[in-house]
Length: 115
Length: 111
Image 1 (cartoon, rainbow over the protein chains, first blue to last red):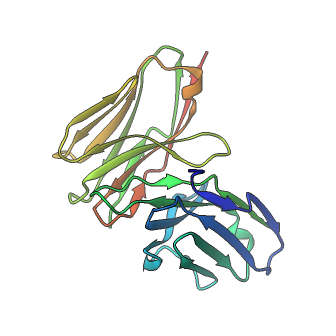
Image 2 (image 1 turned 30 degrees about the vertical axis):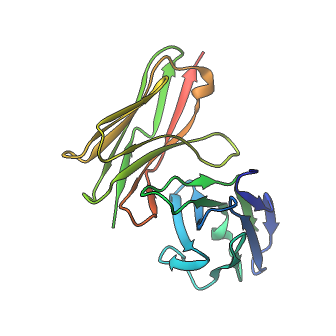
Image 3 (image 1 turned 45 degrees about the horizontal axis):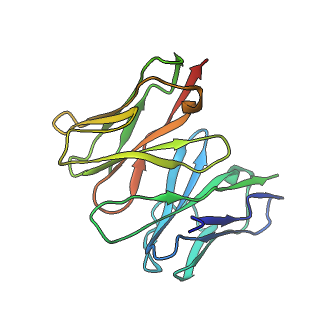
């Protein structure tokens, strides 16, 4: 398996523009997580899905952020409109429900810069 | 909710020495404690984990200990090598499938 795939790897945009980040989880995994990493706040959980259904979106910072998972192999995180303070590295991770513990596998991340 | 504290924030050791990173957690319901290593420009990678029903686990030069009474767990790296240089994160899971991460420790191994 290729692991968790994220695209794009780097995104530079201007304030006010819409940004869409994409994630393909490991095949067969039924949990998908979106994290944001900054120097100031570390790794923050934004939202996670189980079997394509959002379970907890309490980490989503504002209504400008939205996430979808239309099928088991694809998820998007959208920011509209983007602001400079959204600049961060966004990670997607996936895990398998079978078994009691939560081994999460991370993608390489998308580095977002909002000018 | 769960809160995970991690110390130190930076750690510099000489090659061959040992390194210890410590974490504490707040939620007594937490039952899974993974450690992740993040190299520059990459996503965090799981290196070792421990479940609440064991006190210690070892994998070659890496070991993790857990004290549930005191609610703290530690990562021990022996015979450190330059390739161990990275940022290390501890995390805790209360069983809800959502990990809470510590703030990270930047380990620098000096050759």
